[in-house]
Image 1 (tube, rainbow, N blue to C red):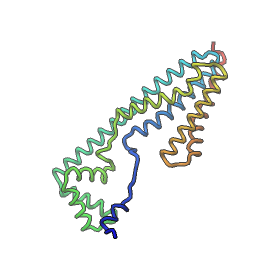
Image 2: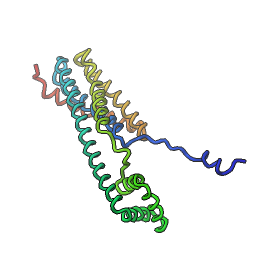
Image 3: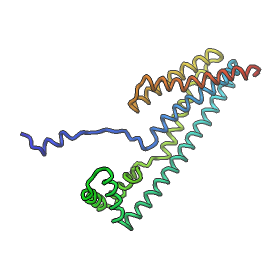
Image 4: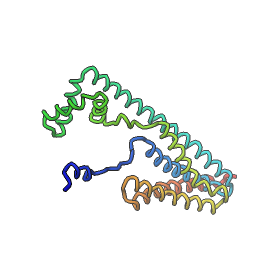
Length: 243
């Protein structure tokens, strides 16, 4: 008969979670979605104004792709860099307080445990155990007080590269038909490709978040097609006299 010591490890659950704090996954999702939505709207707006002149539509689409991808990457890098520097500053302050006033920090940690229902004596003992190791103490205080993981502050460069690449891919989809066709055929092809891409992005997002595929894909499709229809209508109305 197996002993409890042999059985317990077999019953220990294994949880596999995605790393959602690094920033790259978020940047990738927003990048491809923004690239698709913004460029299909731009391309359809230009198509409404000058569908028989594919060179103009291609130029607008390429400009939107390049400008958008660089802007997204720069914005992602700057925002994540500022966030990381803020977190690092808070961690440095916490590290100094742990070194200078360890008992005060232990009491703070014990108060947090007490607020979650732990008995005062047990909370103080648990906080004391955490404070024995300075690195463990810092990690615990960062999680409990600041709500961050010191080992997962995110990579600004990785997020920027991910945003640049995925925005470019999303923006390229509705532009492709204009390299091979023009007029109504290219316009319809842009809409079809953008619609399929939007559904694909929605399905991937649903798989990532665990939400309904039908709802998420439909929402993504609406976010892509409605702006495109509006800009196409505006382009058709305003660009009647374009030559």
